[in-house]
Length: 149
Image (cartoon, rainbow, N blue to C red):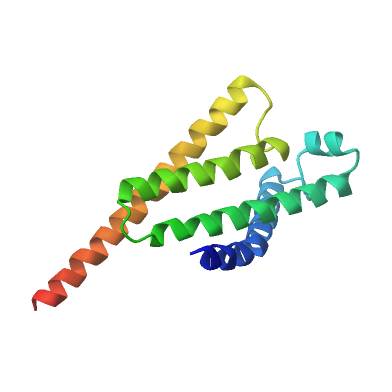
């Protein structure tokens, strides 16, 4: 399992950076003033200049992608209940997501900002989990029907 986690993490790192880049493009398009916003202004202030901020965000995005990809190995754990897999995955994902989002300034550094970020994270996580569970349940039902035929 360790080898699989490492393999997934190594594949997830560049994917995390690519997704981070796509997100900055979407944000820049949404602003609609023709400029490219690579990072939030607060991160530029923290890092002293834009290039340092972009490098930090790229590294954090790679770590983010690696952590999520590596955490996906939890779903392959044999003998674990769905509840245990979900809790372990949520803990790993949260442990990776929160500090990265905090240091990259993807959330305001206030109590309200942190609580709002956590709420949004849990809402999105739950939504994705429910959609994946429903899709998997449908596939299992279809397979069972084919077996009966």
